[in-house]
Image (cartoon, rainbow, N blue to C red):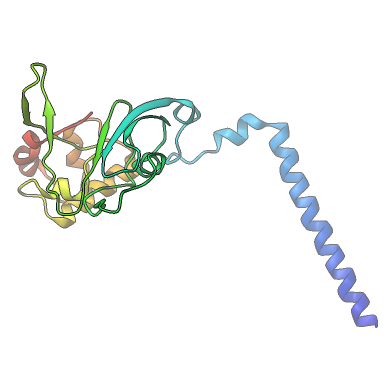
Length: 193
């Protein structure tokens, strides 16, 4: 009986101390909400980024292709789900669903067996091959460039994930395994948007 009483007392003390700790934490957040919002990891999007709205398009093998309004910190996976997900024939092996999406971008989800060719229209409406955007390129798109193998493509994606975006093609010099000579060979294949 005495042992049960001691265990009950210990449980009550533990519960009270936990409750006090939670209450103190909430009081701190209420006292200084500005400090609480300033302690944000640099990897997290800013408040302005979260509130910003973008308009993007998705087409191809999705249930509801079209133009959608998304939050500024959205990823392709969010857009893909908003479009109802993929059809039975959707091929996602060549699609980077984890990539950040930007205002005005258009995404194409291919079907199984379909070969992807990157094309864009110029001012006159003619079709031409486009440069690969370092800020949206998939691993496979990066590896389509001569001189970029699997490990270099992974390094480029890791750098982009760590820093958020490339501000210029010259930022490739910050990526492991890419030096001045390699950059000169790669420069004409890439752009930053």
